[in-house]
Image (cartoon, rainbow, N blue to C red):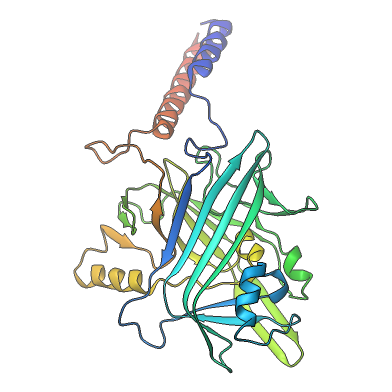
Length: 339
């Protein structure tokens, strides 16, 4: 079989395939997604999340609210001990051809500021608007420096590769914190394979996209105080929409750093109890609750799920057609070589 007809056929097929865009269909003005760490009503004293914040990086309103209960030293971090719910919201404010403005809000409930003085705040809200460059899919600061990639979504057709940047360590190093960039160390499509994933918003079906970072040191020591820890982040995304649906660890992200959080916590104690219940009832081989930030609310419209359990979305059609095209190409090349 002549090679020219094969090439022509492949060109025709490639033109008829749906285009894969870097932005998902739901990425538009007004879209939001909220994630939650839920605290049990009968939470114990040990069921607590700790957020280390740097005063000069805090949004102005949050800085002022903390200063009403605590004398702030701008040269040392502040520990926030959170016993209530934690809500993390991403809201798309404005999308142009080149940029998108993303409002990131973290709501902390039942907060104790500084364990030594034990100053109490019923609620503390940290909020800031970030600029996302749609060309490189990275947040940039006012000077154009790269901060890192958005946490709340990926492009399912082109997920980040190993070695890609997650969060830049430059803002932390300016504070004399010894650490490194968070980069992608693992990309997997087999996380919790075959299991239904429960979240507060809805259940999800596999496959899922797992993006894990490297584990980096986190060291600070000055003025008689010190922090010795490590940091990493691990996010799970819906295969069809690319939306983040849960997390494993979320210590450092570019959004957290922009809010003044230099090292976060992400233990969902209510989800942890739900997961233990699944193990106790012998259902953990088919169902899963991840004890991290779980999707809590969103105005994204998810496409319907077929009776077979595989959502009928463009992404699945794209991969199915791509696979068929590869098989057809291999077959035609085999025929051509034989002839």
